[in-house]
Length: 371
Image 1 (tube, helix red, strand yellow):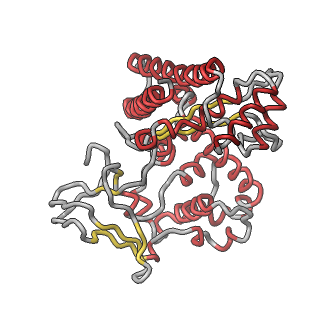
Image 2 (cartoon, helix red, strand yellow):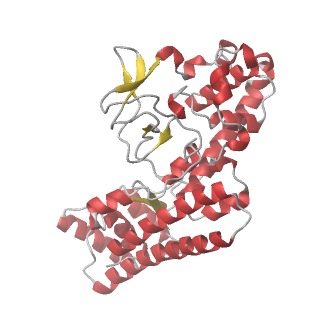
Image 3 (cartoon, one colour):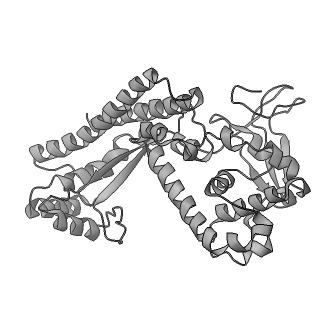
């Protein structure tokens, strides 16, 4: 066992540059593997749903399934740490993290897909799928389905990724370093922030260089210039999130990655400042003045600092207040987390890695934005 739980280890020396993994196409589960009895009833094109239905059909076959040895190696429901399976009080620790939104959006998709299947597929496919509960479907939905490859643990320092050899028609992996017998071999799951790792795989990495945060901003519903500001946003292609009815909400989430802040500095936060300038505009003349400034400087709307130092200071102060609020929220959550004795240690570790990483990015963001 590795410190990460189950893992794959080298049984002999694996030189850097050597191909240590080949998985033939026939051993890769794809959306096309869905049984024909199920496939013709499907209206969804969601590949994860199709993969989940295949997995459920094979589980229903039990020992008669040719995939039984692989299925026996998959984590049981109680062993899955994905935030999709966390209790509400556990998820509440992440309410100011992108992880919370990612989790809620994933659950919304799963429940929506399940309800469609419950009405249009499950009643006619019990002989193929058995009785399927929402929990069963969530379990299948959360399972990776590239046999053997999904047993490798992730290392963000690893350069090895799964690729496809078209000539040999197989998935392959090439070692990025020398491994000696007994060493754990890793794969990279990509430049993935903890918010995605926690939802999709049930873990979070300490000091994740790909960590990211979201800073939400929006035009207030009580702003007397709200309609005019929404029109300005639309006119200058500054899109915002949509309401359920498809109308613009005036809200927008700005995402910042640690690596991007390090590489681009103040350029990375320019769109955030531009949005704040619009939010802080006090009159129609303010909005028009920023339009004129963007033409003069040949930049996108509100991207240039305001000529009026007071107005520019108000916009910067508005941004800094939003960031400081998140810094304080994350700091408090980490302090309170240390005192909590109810959360399982495995989930407390995930929480700590997420909150600590995001706090680091928020502080870096504050240093760049609030100078």
